[in-house]
Structures are given as structure tokens and as C-alpha cells.
Image (cartoon, rainbow, N blue to C red; front, side, top):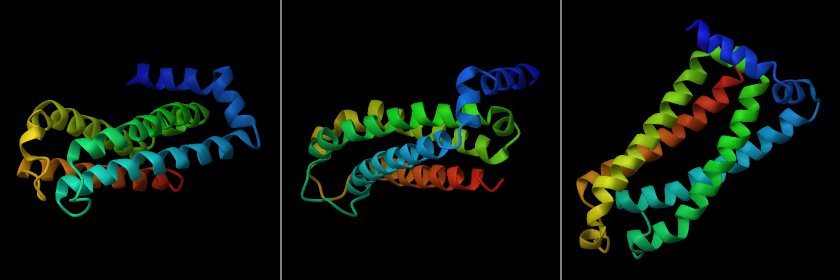
Length: 163
């Protein structure tokens, strides 16, 4: 794990990491943009998740909602990656030792795996069930898991400040 720590040390002491860390206003501005990005990402993903779970938006087909909200999900995710890396760079060695940060990263990985599995397995047959008010069990489980993971990611992100 020494190589991982060395990488974190290098990132934290890079010009980018130093600028964000040493500035009185950059971290709060970047964090605010990060929060807006998570609102867009989790908000849009929750619409799809709630439809998959059969809880809301039953009058819309799954693919119509996906067409409408996936661009927002990807935009929010892009904002998260950029701002998240900048925030990480400003405190990289601190994050290296943070168990909560590691949990957050594992939850993000799990959310990505959940989305990939659903997209390549469950979504392939969407044409046969997307008009049903309640999706098949696999789609409902993907929706439940997604919403739980994203809420966990948000919670872990907030918890990092207190760990």
C-alpha cells in the first residue's frame, strides 16, 4: 500500500492539489459545484429507479424516461468526477487514511457495476416489459439497489467531513 500512499502524496502536493488546498475560496466553490452535480445525478437516477421499482412515473415507458434523464445522469456524473478529483487532490493523503472515503469509493464502484449489469442484462429486454406498471423483479432490484447505493454515496460523502 506504500505505492498508493505515495501516489496520494504526489497528487496532494501537485500544483493542482496545492492550489485547491491553499485557496480560501476554491475548496468551498468546488464543493458547492460537487453538491449541485450530485443533486443532478441522484435526482435524475432516482426518477429512473422509482420507475423501475414501480413506485412512480408508471405512465411513462422506461425507455422514454431513460432517453430524457440519462443525459442528465451523465452530466451530473461528469461534474462529480471532475470536482471529486479536485476535492480529493486537495486532501489526498488525508483521504488515503479515511475509512469513510474508501466506503464511498466502494459504493460508487458498486453503483457502476449495478448500472452495467442492468444495462447489459435487464435493459436488453426492456421492449417486452417497459409499458408494464411494475417492471420484472431483476429491474426492480436494480432500481432499489441503485437508489440505496446513491443515497449511501451521498451519506458517506457528507460523513467524510466529520471523519
